[in-house]
Length: 80
Image (tube, rainbow, N blue to C red; front, side):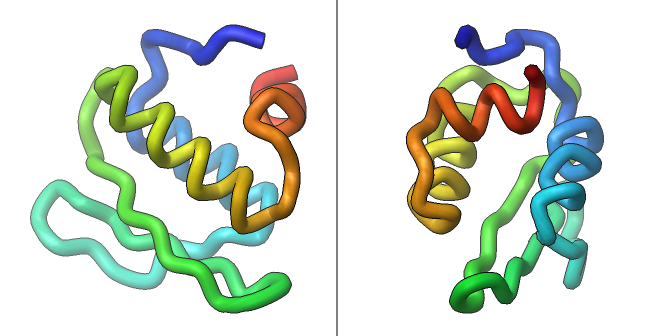
């Protein structure tokens, strides 16, 4: 599945909240999300519109590794 190219930081945050991530703080235009399942994991999302493709790919790769699934499985769960 292809990565959406017009995704904003706010839209990505809403999708990640469905997977158990919660907003813990914000510094400037960067928002920190934390997930406690299975171990604590932090990820920073820029509040930009749209997110750069490389930034989005990096975030998705980190989240997929934390949730022990492939990037394609994560894309299917988030955008399928």
